[in-house]
Image (cartoon, rainbow, N blue to C red; front, side):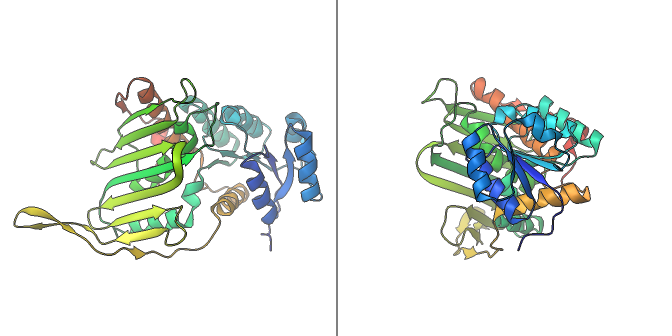
Length: 342
């Protein structure tokens, strides 16, 4: 049964990922229409979803007073313009990651949303994954002890892009989760990688994050890898956790492992991992629901504009490091310190 949403949402861009947003909004009972430049796509979706309003022209779509919300699933370089136009048209805006292509653009969007009282939500999907939600609760409850180190691998063969590199395409997910688990911003980042298929478009990058309490993060992303891997390991003083999103079962494991000191020397403490149960929910549906709830209530979604700014700050610093031979780049917070995590 669809949720009882009374607001109308229009999806802009119905390609590789946009079609999934369309499906979920329809299942939630909040899909009003779509906008796409391809007339064949418009016809195909209209056949699939009877009663769907379709637009080929964005101006006409934004002028439709029946549209309360827009969901943007267009290429990254269009996000800032699309989101700006949506907010100026008085629509609540959901925009896929990244929020924009630089911090200055992202800040303008956040300020515009604040000034107009409209919801701005960013598509950091992994923060809605039930395993990540559960992992965050374990960390906040102190189950792992103080977090010492987090590393993640997001690897696959393709989908190759020419409008953004692998850092901007894959890493936002892991950056968002690491910042949430640690509960703050790094003070320094360093990133290096290689461009093997297309000049100046990195196909693989490794990014290191340093936090002021000594915690570190490590993110390896690549679209030149023989198999798909999406894994995050969280190492705490007391226990360790592994989130393996490509595993068929037991995606979240907790290990009572670490080092014990015996006669002044560290000795490994090895125990069998225990699976951690969590709700079986579709992350994208929860993300769409969070946006709709925020647009209705006026409360901030988990992945609000400030969340997008935090990730943008790290991405931009990482890109600068990547272009300067892995030089460490300090992170300077601004815009009211990006607001604290709740």
